[in-house]
View (cartoon, rainbow, N blue to C red):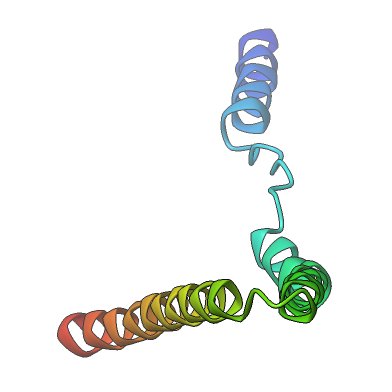
Length: 98
């Protein structure tokens, strides 16, 4: 009788410790961070670039403004291309593995 009760207590203790799910640690919300930067920080940076370009153009440095604007446009095109390739790659992976 004592042995069966002891075995029952041991089995209960083992089940509660082994089968208990580990506590999930909260992760970093990376999509929230990216959306925050896209909504708040990027427009401020673009506005600052615009002010710099307008200031240069008013001093007569039009060639430098055109060069800087072209570089900024090419940079934005590369960023848009990278985002497009990310979605195309995601589509291809889903197409192949599903």
